[in-house]
Amino acid sequence: MAKYEFDLGVIGAGPAGLAAAYAAQALGKQVAIFEDYLWGGTCPNYGCDPKKILLAAVEGIHRQSALQNLGLRGLSTIDWSALMAHKQRYVDAVEPRKIRGLDEAGITRFYGRAAFVNNNTVSVGETGDQIKARDWVIATGQRPKKLTFPGAELAEDSEAFLNLPVMPEDVTFIGAGFIGMEFANITHAAGAHTRIVTAGPTALRSFDQTLVRQLITDMQETGIAWYFNATVQQIMQTPSGRLMVTLVDGTQFETDRVFATAGRVANADQLKLENAGVVWETTEIPVDDHLRTSNPHIYAIGDVGGSPVAKLVPTGNHEGRYVAQAITGFTTAAITYPAIPVVVFGTQHLAQVGVSVEAGQTKGYRVTDVDMSQVMPFYRYNDTARVRTVLDDDGHIVGASVIAAEAEEVINYFVTAINERRTLAETQANLYAYPSLGSEFATFY
Ligand SMILES: Cc1cc2nc3c(=O)[nH]c(=O)nc-3n(C[C@H](O)[C@H](O)[C@H](O)COP(=O)(O)OP(=O)(O)OC[C@H]3O[C@@H](n4cnc5c(N)ncnc54)[C@H](O)[C@@H]3O)c2cc1C
Ligand SMILES: NC(=O)c1ccc[n+]([C@@H]2O[C@H](COP(=O)([O-])OP(=O)(O)OC[C@H]3O[C@@H](n4cnc5c(N)ncnc54)[C@H](O)[C@@H]3O)[C@@H](O)[C@H]2O)c1
Image 1 (cartoon, helix red, strand yellow):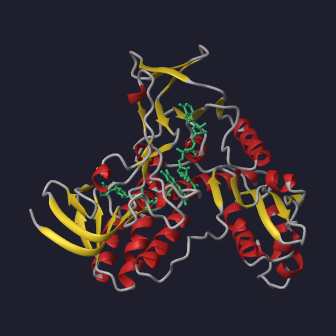
Image 2 (spheres, helix red, strand yellow; image 1 turned 120 degrees about the vertical axis):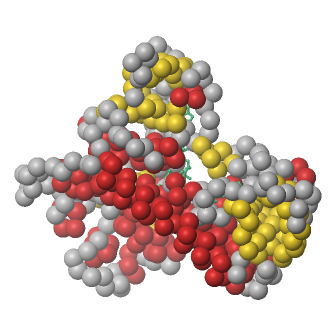
Image 3 (tube, protein in one colour; image 1 turned 180 degrees about the vertical axis):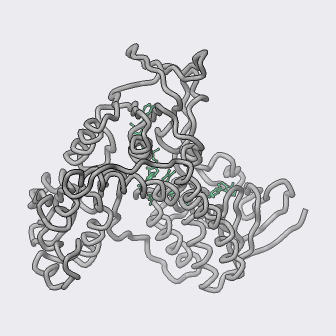
């Protein structure tokens, strides 16, 4: 067993941990980083990036089907194994790139599961090597929540989905959050009959429900089957090798694969946090407004941290850079966040930022609701685009929600406008390339 000493130890090499490690190293700290699975973490290996590569084919088909008899005839079909190979080439390049980047930056890597021995020392993996550091950043992310009904072990997780070798005929998702909604559109476009079983009467509870209803209706019209207010009672294997799903209300159906997309839990339970005096919960490690845990030399950031923001790559990156500044004394201020956009990448994409329409209406703010379908950048694709904007009493843009094929790009214009506290007139001061989404920005509300 070897012993090492560093200024800072970062546990978890996902977007949040990497951001903290690079920033602290650049500010002069000797940094060690620990990873027990894939360097780069969830997003580039089995999260956002592979998902968005698979979605490229879905989007291609969506665009084609919208233009049927408007200049296009016939639809392409998805070649799932070629699409997966395209995705895998990207994923295979991630780890070597992350490792090279860390080595070039002079950040020391330890491979294996890290767990606290005491309040400033961690042991790692099977070697049991001990690493002491003055400060620690926990950036261990989340993993899929396990379901508990009989047969729940037959439901696979999001990583298994992103490595699915063959597209089955019939696929079921349990949970209509980000992951269930995004994956359901992929399986549907790839030709599988797709079902979504979800607790509660709606999907994507944190989104503008007017636009969510529109999205659900679109998905239902394309043939995706929805089971609302539904609880799975059990899953059983049938003699023919399929799966029989039984809901508590007695509904039964046969399907080929079931994926649990019902939320995620914190990777906090295997860190032996009790040895370091860190309090934790199943869903997160609580932190204060400096991202400190109950041990002031141990911070928790990204998906595993209890900060009150959406758990996403941009927020993890932002928290990583902030803790590096806090640990090196470059800031003593509490963390603040700029406007945080959230996007669901379905067939249509749904995006939101800032004050929600519902909250804006409660405050008596002006809310605009514009059907953009006839505006050229959307019309040319026959895209049913809709933009809802919230303007405060002084006319500043404070929130927006968008449904459109390119909602994630449209929302970025609002992000800048909100952060710069622009009014409608001020947005018109920018001259954007014409014709483009940007050139239409001032007509969005
Ligand atoms: C299917 C899917 C799609 C997503 N799509 C999007 C999207 O489109 N946009 C977006 O912004 N976000 C998306 N997310 C969320 C995004 O992936 C996370 O917010 C982001 O990866 C969080 O970064 P992180 O560094 O906090 O955690 P992670 O990326 O999860 O990294 C944590 C790392 O810590 C390691 N680790 C855990 N415990 C230990 C230990 N004890 N010792 C050593 N290492 C450990 C893990 O192996 C992992 O590599 C998606 C997530 C999923 C699952
Ligand atoms: N585009 C993106 O930015 C993106 C994409 C994917 C994931 N993510 C991140 O990953 C996180 C987790 O995503 P998720 O979709 O797994 O969780 P989620 O919390 O977004 O949604 C879970 C869904 O499952 C339902 N549910 C919970 N328990 C259930 C049960 N027992 N039976 C049936 N339904 C049940 C909930 O009602 C909800 O609809 C997100 O919060 C987000 O931070 C982001």
